[in-house]
Image: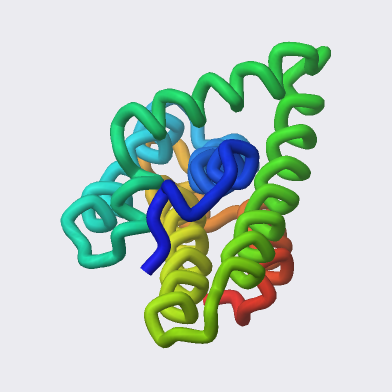
Length: 172
Protein backbone atom coordinates (compact mmCIF):
# COMPACT_ATOMS: atom_id res chain seq x y z
CA UNK A 1 0.00 0.00 0.00
CA UNK A 2 1.13 3.49 -0.82
CA UNK A 3 2.00 6.01 1.85
CA UNK A 4 2.73 9.72 1.72
CA UNK A 5 6.48 9.05 1.45
CA UNK A 6 5.93 7.23 -1.87
CA UNK A 7 5.05 10.52 -3.59
CA UNK A 8 6.81 13.74 -4.45
CA UNK A 9 5.49 16.84 -2.67
CA UNK A 10 3.74 17.91 -5.88
CA UNK A 11 2.10 14.50 -6.32
CA UNK A 12 1.01 14.43 -2.70
CA UNK A 13 -0.56 17.87 -3.03
CA UNK A 14 -2.75 16.59 -5.88
CA UNK A 15 -3.75 13.46 -3.93
CA UNK A 16 -4.45 15.49 -0.80
CA UNK A 17 -6.39 18.28 -2.54
CA UNK A 18 -8.67 16.26 -4.84
CA UNK A 19 -11.14 15.07 -2.15
CA UNK A 20 -11.61 18.57 -0.76
CA UNK A 21 -12.07 20.08 -4.21
CA UNK A 22 -14.66 17.39 -5.05
CA UNK A 23 -16.58 18.08 -1.84
CA UNK A 24 -16.64 21.84 -2.29
CA UNK A 25 -17.40 21.67 -6.02
CA UNK A 26 -20.44 19.43 -5.47
CA UNK A 27 -21.63 21.57 -2.55
CA UNK A 28 -21.55 24.71 -4.68
CA UNK A 29 -23.06 23.05 -7.78
CA UNK A 30 -26.64 23.06 -6.45
CA UNK A 31 -28.72 25.70 -4.74
CA UNK A 32 -29.47 24.24 -1.33
CA UNK A 33 -30.15 27.37 0.66
CA UNK A 34 -28.50 28.10 3.99
CA UNK A 35 -29.60 24.95 5.87
CA UNK A 36 -28.93 22.70 2.90
CA UNK A 37 -25.52 24.25 2.40
CA UNK A 38 -24.70 23.54 6.04
CA UNK A 39 -25.75 19.90 5.59
CA UNK A 40 -23.62 19.65 2.45
CA UNK A 41 -20.64 21.22 4.22
CA UNK A 42 -20.85 18.59 6.96
CA UNK A 43 -21.54 15.62 4.65
CA UNK A 44 -17.91 14.85 3.71
CA UNK A 45 -16.96 14.47 7.37
CA UNK A 46 -18.61 11.05 7.57
CA UNK A 47 -16.65 9.74 4.59
CA UNK A 48 -13.44 11.20 5.97
CA UNK A 49 -14.02 9.65 9.39
CA UNK A 50 -14.72 6.29 7.73
CA UNK A 51 -11.44 6.62 5.82
CA UNK A 52 -9.53 7.57 8.96
CA UNK A 53 -10.85 4.43 10.67
CA UNK A 54 -10.26 2.23 7.64
CA UNK A 55 -7.39 -0.04 6.65
CA UNK A 56 -6.19 1.96 3.66
CA UNK A 57 -3.06 3.87 4.69
CA UNK A 58 -3.26 6.22 1.72
CA UNK A 59 -6.81 7.33 2.50
CA UNK A 60 -5.99 7.69 6.19
CA UNK A 61 -3.10 9.99 5.31
CA UNK A 62 -5.17 12.01 2.82
CA UNK A 63 -7.91 12.54 5.43
CA UNK A 64 -5.57 13.59 8.22
CA UNK A 65 -6.68 16.85 9.86
CA UNK A 66 -3.53 18.77 8.89
CA UNK A 67 -3.74 17.51 5.30
CA UNK A 68 -7.40 18.59 5.07
CA UNK A 69 -6.49 22.03 6.40
CA UNK A 70 -3.73 22.37 3.80
CA UNK A 71 -6.16 21.29 1.07
CA UNK A 72 -8.64 23.99 2.11
CA UNK A 73 -5.84 26.52 1.90
CA UNK A 74 -5.28 25.35 -1.68
CA UNK A 75 -8.96 25.86 -2.43
CA UNK A 76 -8.83 29.40 -1.06
CA UNK A 77 -5.85 30.13 -3.28
CA UNK A 78 -7.65 28.87 -6.38
CA UNK A 79 -10.94 30.71 -5.87
CA UNK A 80 -9.68 34.03 -4.51
CA UNK A 81 -9.19 35.45 -8.00
CA UNK A 82 -12.69 34.51 -9.20
CA UNK A 83 -14.89 37.51 -9.93
CA UNK A 84 -18.24 36.19 -8.68
CA UNK A 85 -20.01 33.08 -7.38
CA UNK A 86 -20.62 31.65 -10.88
CA UNK A 87 -16.91 31.98 -11.64
CA UNK A 88 -16.08 30.29 -8.33
CA UNK A 89 -18.42 27.40 -9.16
CA UNK A 90 -16.88 26.99 -12.61
CA UNK A 91 -13.35 27.15 -11.21
CA UNK A 92 -14.13 24.57 -8.52
CA UNK A 93 -15.86 22.25 -11.01
CA UNK A 94 -12.89 22.33 -13.39
CA UNK A 95 -10.35 21.95 -10.60
CA UNK A 96 -12.22 19.07 -8.96
CA UNK A 97 -12.42 16.96 -12.11
CA UNK A 98 -8.87 17.82 -13.18
CA UNK A 99 -7.38 17.04 -9.77
CA UNK A 100 -9.39 13.82 -9.46
CA UNK A 101 -8.14 12.67 -12.85
CA UNK A 102 -4.55 13.69 -12.08
CA UNK A 103 -4.64 11.94 -8.70
CA UNK A 104 -5.79 8.65 -10.19
CA UNK A 105 -3.15 8.91 -12.92
CA UNK A 106 -0.48 9.44 -10.25
CA UNK A 107 -1.69 6.35 -8.40
CA UNK A 108 -1.77 4.29 -11.59
CA UNK A 109 1.80 5.34 -12.41
CA UNK A 110 2.99 4.42 -8.92
CA UNK A 111 1.33 1.04 -8.78
CA UNK A 112 3.77 -1.82 -8.88
CA UNK A 113 1.18 -4.37 -10.00
CA UNK A 114 0.82 -5.67 -6.49
CA UNK A 115 -2.74 -6.28 -5.30
CA UNK A 116 -2.35 -3.58 -2.63
CA UNK A 117 -1.35 -0.94 -5.17
CA UNK A 118 -4.28 -1.82 -7.42
CA UNK A 119 -6.52 -1.61 -4.34
CA UNK A 120 -5.22 1.92 -3.65
CA UNK A 121 -6.38 3.11 -7.08
CA UNK A 122 -9.83 1.57 -6.68
CA UNK A 123 -10.16 2.73 -3.06
CA UNK A 124 -9.24 6.29 -4.01
CA UNK A 125 -11.67 6.33 -6.96
CA UNK A 126 -14.46 4.96 -4.76
CA UNK A 127 -13.61 7.45 -2.01
CA UNK A 128 -13.91 10.45 -4.35
CA UNK A 129 -17.20 9.23 -5.81
CA UNK A 130 -18.55 8.50 -2.34
CA UNK A 131 -17.62 12.01 -1.20
CA UNK A 132 -19.38 13.57 -4.16
CA UNK A 133 -22.49 11.44 -3.69
CA UNK A 134 -22.66 12.13 0.05
CA UNK A 135 -22.51 15.86 -0.53
CA UNK A 136 -25.05 15.76 -3.36
CA UNK A 137 -27.49 13.68 -1.29
CA UNK A 138 -27.07 15.68 1.93
CA UNK A 139 -29.83 18.20 1.22
CA UNK A 140 -32.76 18.74 -1.10
CA UNK A 141 -32.30 21.29 -3.81
CA UNK A 142 -35.06 23.80 -4.54
CA UNK A 143 -37.11 22.99 -1.45
CA UNK A 144 -38.75 25.37 0.99
CA UNK A 145 -38.22 24.42 4.63
CA UNK A 146 -37.64 20.82 3.57
CA UNK A 147 -40.81 20.55 1.46
CA UNK A 148 -40.58 19.77 -2.23
CA UNK A 149 -37.40 19.94 -4.19
CA UNK A 150 -35.19 17.09 -5.32
CA UNK A 151 -32.47 15.18 -3.52
CA UNK A 152 -29.80 15.69 -6.21
CA UNK A 153 -30.06 18.64 -8.58
CA UNK A 154 -29.30 18.48 -12.29
CA UNK A 155 -26.05 20.49 -11.88
CA UNK A 156 -24.94 18.04 -9.17
CA UNK A 157 -25.83 15.01 -11.34
CA UNK A 158 -23.88 16.53 -14.21
CA UNK A 159 -20.85 17.19 -12.02
CA UNK A 160 -20.98 13.66 -10.55
CA UNK A 161 -21.06 12.22 -14.08
CA UNK A 162 -18.08 14.41 -15.07
CA UNK A 163 -16.27 13.26 -11.96
CA UNK A 164 -16.92 9.60 -12.76
CA UNK A 165 -15.60 10.12 -16.32
CA UNK A 166 -12.49 11.88 -15.01
CA UNK A 167 -11.91 8.92 -12.66
CA UNK A 168 -12.57 6.46 -15.50
CA UNK A 169 -15.32 4.66 -13.55
CA UNK A 170 -19.04 4.10 -13.90
CA UNK A 171 -21.16 6.66 -12.03
CA UNK A 172 -23.00 5.26 -9.03
